[in-house]
View 1 (tube, rainbow, N blue to C red):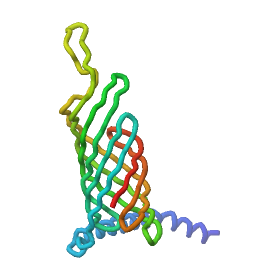
View 2 (view 1 turned 60 degrees about the vertical axis):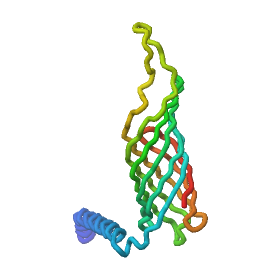
View 3 (view 1 turned 45 degrees about the vertical axis):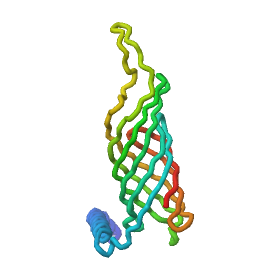
View 4 (view 1 turned 90 degrees about the vertical axis):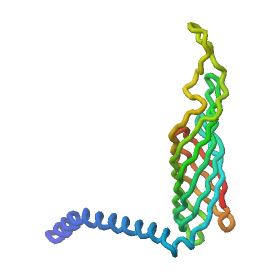
Amino acid sequence: MKRAVLILAIAILSCPSILAQTKSDDAVDWAREWKYAFSKEGRKNWKPEITGRVYAGFITGGPAITGGVRIDDKRTLGLMLWKGNKWIDSEPAHVYSISTGLYIRRYVHFGKKDIVALYNDIAIGAGYVYKINCEYRIDPVSGEPYNPIDDNEGDVFFCATWQPGIRIRLVKNLHIFLGPTLATNTVGFHLGAGF
């Protein structure tokens, strides 16, 4: 009994150091992967990757495209461009915007043939309101027209989006994908294709 308690105590006390070592090893492996991907030999494996998608959510939806470089079988870096159509039923009004940002995509493959994979797209950038369709109201006191919504043409805003999902490869790198969309301007779903 004493021996079992002693072994259990040693295991419990050494657990934090084992976990710390595991996290340290993971960080070292992660840094090595990035270093190799940008090395002269690693850059030979880079391939272009382009996707087109449609996203739809609460009050906002539209098309989006990405163009980037698949630096290895796990990661893609590039630019995302998306168009937004925000509708406000209470006025009614439509606010049209265009946004762009840098994105990183991370894949987790299932199986040796990499047909099915989970992915995470994270993009951060800025957007621009280029058009508003809204009827101006007349202020009853001053008699001046005013915009009843908060958005104005020419507004610039911060935007970020997270789009995790599942990807199914059809032929070579031709694939379809779908998943939820969580962004600064909407919460909804996306569906797309890429090559």
